[in-house]
Every structure is written in C-alpha cells, then in structure tokens.
Length: 518
Image 1 (tube, helix red, strand yellow):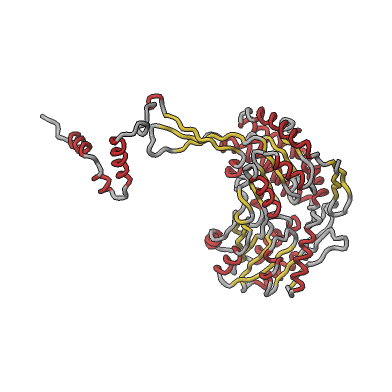
Image 2 (cartoon, rainbow, N blue to C red):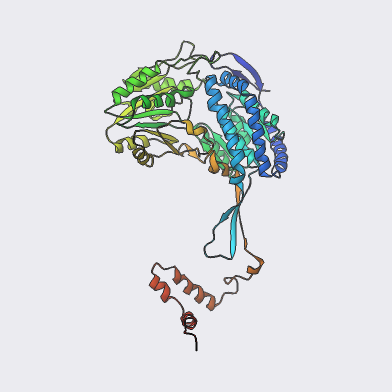
C-alpha cells in the first residue's frame, strides 16, 4: 500500500505517514455513498440546514486545535488559519443554514400567454458528487463545497490535496461529530491518479479548484461520460490604483492583497497598475510597509508571512525571478529564498519591460507582485484585461462612482472597489471567474444551484382549466387561419394590431358598445 509523508512546510518535520486510498476501492465507496445519499435526500431541506448550525458549533468548539493543524500542515500563520479559513467557514454555515431552504424552495415562473396554467422550478440533489480541492486554503475551500453539497442533499467523495490530507480527514470527522450520517462525506487520500479514478467512476458532477493544466485534464476526462464540471482555476489578478487614491490606503491594500497567505491565493494581487503620477511614491510606500512584515515559522504565532506550502511551486518562482533578473527588471525587494528554501522573501518587481515578462503575465501563486504604470483609464483597463485569466480585479480610488464605472469594464468574475481578495470568503456573494480561470460559481444562491438539478413543473391552475389544447391533432385550415391571425397581435404598431381584428370581432365589439334601447 502506497503512503504519503505529510510534512510541515516551514520545518520539513514529518507530521504523519498516511496510507493512500486503494484505487480498487473507489467503486465500492461510490456505492456506499449512493445508499447514504438516497436516505439523506429524503430529509427535509430545513432539517438539513439545521444540521449546519450543529456543524458551526463544532467548529467553534475546535477552533484553536483547527488553527494549529492548518498552520502546521499548510504553513500559514495561525491568525490567517483562524480568520481566513475557520471563521469564514463559520460564516458559510450561518448563511446557508438561514438562506439555504429559501434558495432551494420551489420558484414560481410568471406566465405570459398561458394565464390558465402555472409553472415553477423544483430543485433536487445531483446524487454522489466528487470534490477535489487544493492545498492553499485546505479548510475553507472544501468546507464551502461540502456545506453546499450536503445542504442540497448530495453525498460527496472528497479528495483533499495530497499536500494537506490531514486537514481533509479532520473535515470529515467534524461533519460526523456534528451528527451528519457516516458515509455522507468520504475522504479519499491520494495524488492525481486517485483523482482521475474518481472521475472515471461517473460522479454526478465534479467540483475542482486548482491549476489550469489539471482543470483541462479533468474536463477532458469528464467529457467521456458527459460528467458536468465546475472549475475554479488560476488567476493573475490586477489592482488598478488611480491618481486620486489615498496612498496610505492603497499601499496597505496592496500589501495585504499581494502577500496574505504568502501570496498563495488564486485571488492574490499579482499585478499592480498604478497611475504614473503617483507610481514612485506608491512603490516607496509599499516597499517600506513590506519591510515591517515578519516572515518565519508559524509555530510561535508571531509571524505575518508563513512558509511556501508546495515544493514544486518553488520552481515556478525560481524560473520567473531568473528571467526577470536576466532581462534587467528592477527588484525593489526580495527575489531570493531563505537558506533552507522554506521561504521566498516577499518580492516587489518593476521596470520598463516588466509587461513582457512571465512574472507579470503568468500565474506566480506566491509572495511576488509586479508593478507597472498607466497614463489614461483606457490604458489601465486594457492592461488589466490583457490576461488569459479573469478571477478578481480591484480598483483603488477616492471616487467610488468612477471606480464603479471602471469595474464594469474589467473582465473578471469579481471586481472590488477599495478592497482586495476577501470576497472569496463571503458566503452571500458568488465566486468564480471567466476565461481560463474556469466556469461555474461557488457561494451565494448561484453557487448553491450548482449542486442541484433543476426540474420545471407545468400544471393547470385548476381542474376547471383542463381541456384539449387548440393546437392538438388533427390540424385544420381553421386552426391555421386562427393562429395566423393571432400572430398579427404581436406587431409593434398598435394600428396594425387593431386592424388585425377579424370582421366578426368588430361586429361583436360594435354590438357590445350599442346604446341601450329605451
């Protein structure tokens, strides 16, 4: 049996040796999950929602232990583990417990022509779904999809990243401790081969968060069985800083947006596009604030920047930084690893040719931000949109209306004005992207609808309105003539509509308007 060595990325310490799931077990795991799902789907949605409040209570009871586990396995500061992952998950439970039943109740459809009939949408579970999540937010990202998935009545085969599997196992334990049925969530441990096996076994839907390259492979594999997919992939997210921006505010926003979680966020600010009139002052301010941040192991709980979680990602940093240095880019800070290579020193890079380099155009997914300038708003928008990704964009300005007008021109799933990154954790708002960032949404009502089938039901308003429709067989010349006349009532001109009344209709109208006899 193959095993995984789970390590603390800040120290290299082996936390646990973990057996991988045998791929030959996947079919039986699906079958068991299917049996549990059929029973769970019969539980009223309000009762399923109330279980989320029990889960919320469990998270609160375990918050310190969970923060430590996330920090040890992922390498982020304990404060970020608590606020950005656990607290955000508590908010998810709170929102969907309250709003889930309302979102999933039958939705009436207003009828136009057929007033004697009614239509509504009815939502029902997909069945057994597969959720595959990454290592950068190993608690929040799966929690969002698992919360929505079970609320909608599904069972889930859940594969956490092989870099952070202990957190995945703990999540399943939390759901079971909160009283959810065993087998409703099944954690599968392994690398991409196990993920591929999960997809081969025809889940009702695949939810994947990760790289563009892997997302394309998943989509291709899923197409063999027409399995629907929801993909949240990469980002190279821009922040536009207008000339009127408050520089203290703008540099603080850029600092957190670029370097929280050591930049290991798909929504991280990786490109800053700043007006040329304030560029030098902005760069100096950002550089000064970055110098105050403490980078180191999260075990002591006194750091701002944690370790690099994924060893292979360091190759990306090294390649991009080398190219930038070879081509004469201006490094304002960072650009090198610590002696043990567990940390990349936070990096700000600029220069006249920065827009030609990989460090500006390709996803870095680390503590690196590239800065360029603009003269006009049109130029800023063009530069922001010049990317194959489209997840998040930000606009920093004192003029909110102007910022909103710019936001409507940016090609991104979310645009924040005078804020960065954090909407990824808001349960009320949809999260997802365009272009190669993928498709589908998480969170909000739009996100919850991703976890259900939609059934349209059409019926008479009353038994009094049950009669044979005029367009049924057999067809007659009278039917054709009547429908042909009826189409005339859709003309734009009221004069032509009135003229379309048949002679018998005019006679009837004249009869109804006659003066009463004395």
